[in-house]
Length: 342
Image (cartoon, rainbow, N blue to C red):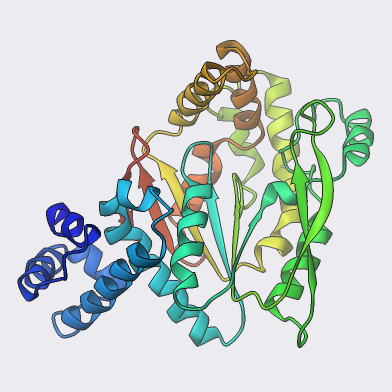
């Protein structure tokens, strides 16, 4: 399969035998067929459409090297997922809000960039909105920390302006004719890394919103679960912090109700996020930039796991087909593993 895709990248015209090989592969992969709605009756049409889209991408996006570096992911996941988004957007008859849940290193930003490129071929305008963009201002978080000194980092439930998020998503979902919408943006580099809100981005005519974040869509769980929680929730104070953050999570449900769909980028082992963060810091320091030590990173990641532990909050979502439309496993090397629905 890769050889066929590489030939297309280098300008070779797709040959009928190419499509026959890809059809056989697609039909032998029953899970993939169910995911993307492929049947023996429509496989030729579906793959012809995907092939046309693939070739157009490399004709029009030659300045986007990531595509040629991950051809298998592009063919198996990015292209069919983007096509599904287009179909769902057309069925909705209004802008679509696609939630993307994923921790450090799972590829949320990459997915959003690639989807934006692909969707532009359908003449759809796509907006990426991060949960980070909804942080309360620096001064608001300073006051918050005085009230609750445990909120030493931005990020846990309670540090976001939920009402702002609801207002923005409502405007995006049901825009008035020619309405200009102010999209909040956040600069993490301000105030020595504490970050602050900056001037909003003004947009109009958005078709698809990609709303991503490390706990987008997470729901509260039964508080007694924290009495037997996994590491690093070990002390009584850790358990209380986890329970308090779980209670804060209830306030986010109205925001999650603005999602039309939710996809989870799920590491095969949640502990990979810590390894990925350490490697990212090493790479940054190798470029002469400042970064945290391994110990500091470990404490940083543990803090977020104490707030919302992946084992406790993401596993229930994965098992809930009413809230999640797609689960994508992420391998240790950041590559795409199994893709499935419940």
